[in-house]
Amino acid sequence: MVTIAVTAERDGEPRVAVSPETVKKLTALGCTVRVQAGAGARSRFSDDALKAQGASVAASAAEALRGADILLKVHRPSSEEVKALKPGAIVAAMLSPFDDRPGLDALAGTGAALMAMEFMPRISRAQSMDVLSSQANLAGYKAVVDAAAMFGQAVPMMMTAAGTVPAAKAFIMGVGVAGLQAIATARRLGAIVSATDVRPATKEQVASLGAKFIAVEDEEFKQAQTAAGYAKPMSADYQRKQAELVASHIKNQDIVITTALIPGRPAPKLISAAMVESMKPGAVIVDLAAERGGNTELTQPGKVIDHKGVTIAGPLNLAGEVPVNASSLYAKNLLAFLETMIDKKERVLKINWDDEIVKGTLVAKDGRIVHPSLQTQGA
Image 1 (cartoon, rainbow, N blue to C red):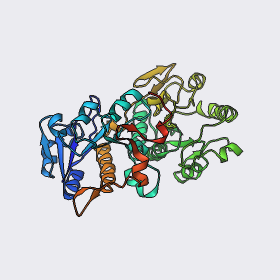
Image 2 (image 1 turned 90 degrees about the horizontal axis):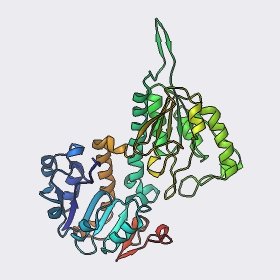
Image 3 (image 1 turned 45 degrees about the horizontal axis):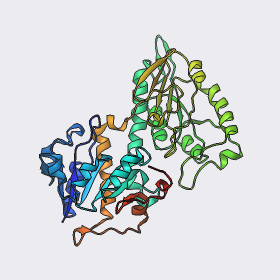
Image 4 (image 1 turned 90 degrees about the vertical axis):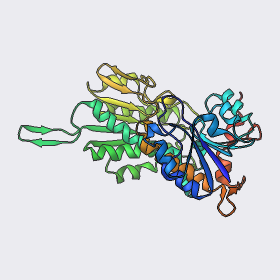
């Protein structure tokens, strides 16, 4: 029998790592699911709803954790939480592995097998486990909805007897999962949408959603994508040419959503103070890269500021602002991941440590940091 613990997240994080739906499916796999009382409340998953699907509700985190085989979290747990698990237990969470290395080393020192859900390989069979995609999708949607609210004007074109209200112009910078959803949402709201990205494969995706593609399409642009599908850092010359193009385009935009992030690096600066100052009063920028310093020179992470009439928002957890959906999707990502590790007949943990999904996400095991991308980083 596999025991799974789920505890409440830190203050300010409304998401939770299970849902009534995934509790039911984990229980059907033969797992015991122990959830800390109130852990799902901010995602509107009541203790009674979880209990009705087979979870046992523990009065405290300590009770939920005691001797468990697996701990599921949204964010990195404390080493005290992990020490309460069985020796060598599995921890699956968004561990922010590039942040707070001493904290990660301390967690590795507990001997637990730490699985960073952010490191899920971008392969077809792991799509259902891709937490970055599930959460970014919601963040892209919420960014546009919030921007439209802050804009304070109508977004679609409206024909009235008194005259025509022009459609707002929305510019999406970075066409990953969040960017694509932002394009789709802005189009649904009736905006005139344009988008930019350094990866050539995104041009067709942008066009398929009815938006206009804006980029310097030179030879470097044609090579600007890694095998894993991420954007490569661009040369200074390309960045200068792209910045000139963006500067001429951005001054006419009403809503700008920036989404450019490269894993483990500071966010690339795409919008200078001068570009912001060229924009119309009332324009809105929502910077989805605020957690890594922001794509806008003036972004203040976690704050909404006004700079010479332009609103700049630097939200840190937009997916968490739609917690019912975010938790439901995240819990399904974790369920799909755990299903690869649980023997359905014998109802025991049976992990294939050579599986590329396990190898890709495994950050630490047996007291050591083992992930290749973290080997060169010192404490």
